[in-house]
Length: 75
Image 1 (cartoon, rainbow, N blue to C red):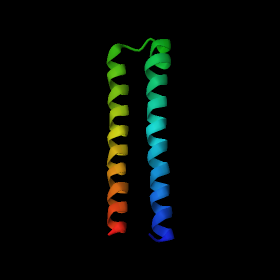
Image 2: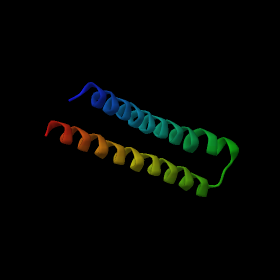
Image 3: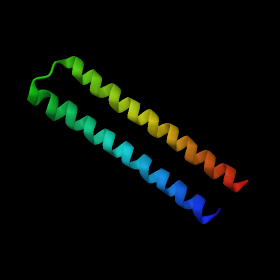
Image 4: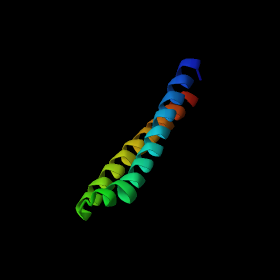
């Protein structure tokens, strides 16, 4: 693999890791602390759940792209 491709995959991997960790942390904060503290109705919890799910689907797509990049570079 070339150094440029390695850097590109590493950058995409770091981005994906940040998305996963950030979405889970924000989801935990929103559902356990912010929502109850503000007295938000339960339907907002569902909104937070869908936002976290969308972020994790985005991360899954990125993981598949990284995997395909690695497969193509190995021949």
